[in-house]
Image (cartoon, rainbow, N blue to C red):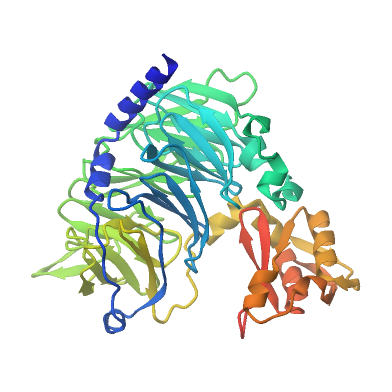
Length: 523
């Protein structure tokens, strides 16, 4: 009976997908696109950074969800494959099969330690570092929209209009477990799932609104909204004596048909009354509103300076994120337009160009300053849009598993639009940016120095021989290094001075610091 109820709730959840589900259906078309030629890329002023294939289970399979966070690209297929890719090199870091084939839903949430997906009425948590399953949890109701996860909890919207907060702290977000983070996940938890720590229900709130859209979060607040325009703010961490988590309610004047965008503590809601609302998630107050002319038809995308928003007839507009004012004046006939009418979906942006697609899924390259169309290329065979608000990289994907990463020929290193937010949200980056004082003078093998540094600052270092061997460099772990004297400098500069002695640098992956070969001529 419980199983039947779970299936019925999952069915209700699918019915509530609405427009988002219809868009997924339109993306199911299987195609086998050809790679763009070097001549074409040169004409578009693009360079291919990498290409890769995610394994597919024949033409029935395809990409159901992609998710960019920090330096990772997570991919979910309809057959139940979850893969973590290095978004800057294309390397497939791990692959994992979850649940029964073709039962996975298009939801994925990530924190610094874990990746959570939904299969039927179950949450499955994977280690972000290894892809090994660390937890499987039955849900009390069907999931209706995108869930979110922070370092302590996972927040789940359901078909019953209830919002559940599960404490996953012991599984994927425990603060101060840097020593455990460096261990292999199977060694840490053992191979028997019944021995894993179980998550607990932290709180539940009856919202009485249709939870049909992905939740939005800031550091302290959870924001939920319904197609009718009703919006609710919830405090994540309950205070003693609180009867419920809700702290405010508000409503937009129009109905909402597309998911919201966000940046920091501001949520951007597009409604069918032709208005883009910028709302402070902490206070629930309106920061500004922008009139687009017709109904908002795509999810708003926010970067450090701008918000990109598409309306039904006007097309794509670039909005000042601080004020809500339009930034483009595009010549149209004898007048000017604030939007590019040919552009339908924002994909990526750098300092000079905006990459978008038209309604036929052809790639458009727009002048970022003026908004005019500079060039076009037929990318209609790449059916899966990957919207990138994290960096300037342009990703194209198809249901045969092909994924391409392109970038401006003059922009070799990625531009990180959300670097400040990433540093604020990552405990590792916080520690690396903190100033330290060290008398220096100590000397020894690199692995001993890193072990000491890790114990002192609560960090985990991983040094693997393989990348150094591939780069033609000796294993750095046994090489002698000397700790320099440091006076109130960021820890990351102190670390870099040590690693430079063995031709190495570092990268941050979740809560782990990976020591890798330095690039020739620089970091």
